[in-house]
Image (cartoon, rainbow, N blue to C red):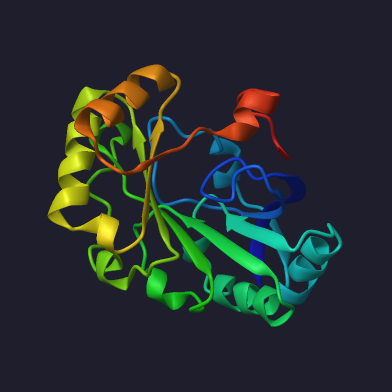
Length: 212
């Protein structure tokens, strides 16, 4: 069984899939409390659904790209089975995770989009360290940058673990307190070949809009 917050269709707002039509399954519950969390409503208990009924709800959206997100989807043991259900039907499956739990539990053909929590999140000690060794070339690691200290911290993390040789690396601004222009200028000055990510769904619909 799965505790489900919401199932909806939208425009993918983040990652290298930004701009694509996407079906979302947002699972309920999270083990972290990031300072900038924009989905606090997903912490509450959701609707209990079987893997089959949850998958059926997502299939009905008519999108071949599916993201499973939260909350933290890896808190629920049946998340891997839900991924497998989509994969068996030929869907592209993205799983967005906060990095605190073992990503190797997910099927190999999933695209794992893993946050590495910066100091500005208040959760920088929560990374499950073995996840770095589990990363593959199609996985994506995201850093949400709140200030110049976060930026320097993230650069050191990327370089010391040779992340650019392992996977796709994305730096995104915490736009509540950091202007995208500032982050862009830091990336240019550092001459580091990370991707800069913006939350496209917030640009379109604004902050804290459920079902978007």
